[in-house]
Image 1 (cartoon, rainbow, N blue to C red):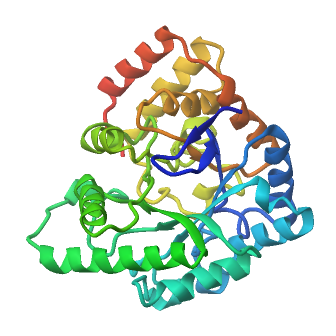
Image 2: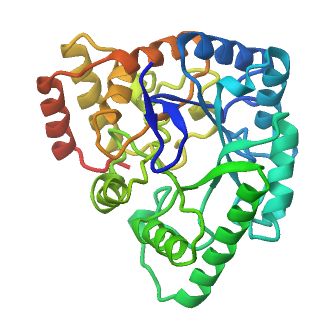
Image 3: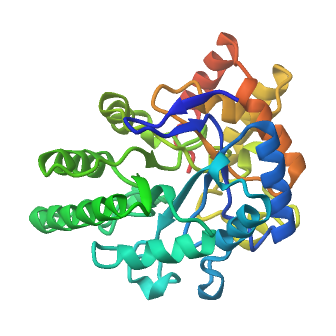
Length: 347
């Protein structure tokens, strides 16, 4: 599998990243280990998890369980050094984790030690802030986004504090690099400016939702990612399974995310079904699996390093893995562009 250097760091990652947020809820430990075994055998060595996982649903009593599952696989196989490991520290809005304590320079040593213990490792390759601490327009908040004036000095002071905390973790050898998630273009640019101005480590990546159905990153954030060499790690590149064509307005398979969350956190609405139909029709016309096509498409985008996909079975994982070698024709890409014009931002 092809690899890419993550931003300005020394981390070399595979062009596909295996997401884990269903492990411990929709997937058992044994099922998760089977996926890890298969991914490793196929050459995929980039893994992403989070302190708050598993999701669907997030519950205080299961916070950290996904990291524990990864830790037992590392202990069983001895393959920790084969993998690039990313995890995320929870933000105040994620109340299930540490009662919404969030993160700061004072808190980060505790949170990283918790992740290291659960993961059964002594270092995390990429430690990411799961959300900013200020209000943001992600997760469908863009439809009612109305940025009110805020205390920029206070926000920047908080950012410098976190930068100093990440620097301390790097110096202590507990993390190698740090990154952002669910961040805005302004926020990313501000983190970079403050890091440079204070001689502190820059974020090396930004992990935001990005797919054929969610292309908010295509404009300002994409330009920033390319210009500043801070690549995008798209999460939910299959639109939470919508692009797999397994759902329909009245069809919800058992043991799927939609069986737990009817709207897929606001992604399902009347506009999404024509968009899904347009993209799955493109795949059908060209003899492509729609999931493989959707993943391969993200790899054509200049700001993308590696999409983060999840699988509920080894069979689904095998389909996703084919995207690493799939080259989409100019005709397919043109049809995708036209579908985007016809169905812009369906959720």
